[in-house]
Image (cartoon, rainbow, N blue to C red; front, side):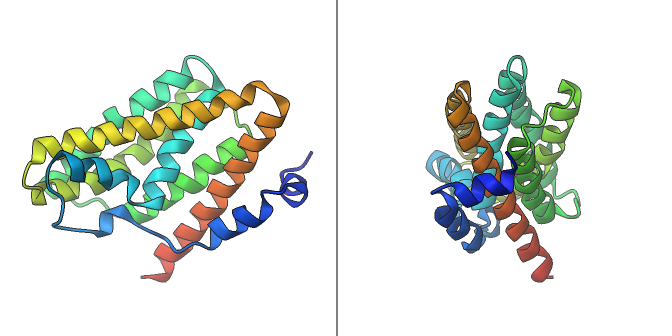
Length: 203
């Protein structure tokens, strides 16, 4: 069944449409207010772009199965730390917000299409997006009153978001659950496209 038919026949269509029309919320636009573990914990979950991408990593990993189900969620925060280091040092990295928005679009499409590329391709794609997410977090780190606690906080939040995606992926064991996950991918992709357009429109 085509993805478009799934959307039209699903009761989830109205909520999906509402989600796609929701205003973009970028966690990395709030500067200079992060302090300590609590702020670090809240930072990744305060932006729709970050939340969608990190949950999507967990869902896609579940679709791909072992070893991707644990490799992708582990690779993301590890590579994210590289982007974070670049952000802390103020190393120029063009297109950060665009890259973050594109991550939701691309990962949502991967889920919607139940894409099964070679593991190294999936890991590389996730790693590239992780650099942009890490950079956004790292750019806030110098403003934190407790940088170490802040860093631990946002890494913890990232792990929890990945875990929630993996938990949702459990529904993929059933046919109805697989359809629901693909619909979730459609919603993530459409919202990602909305975010991309928002970034482009703000220039």
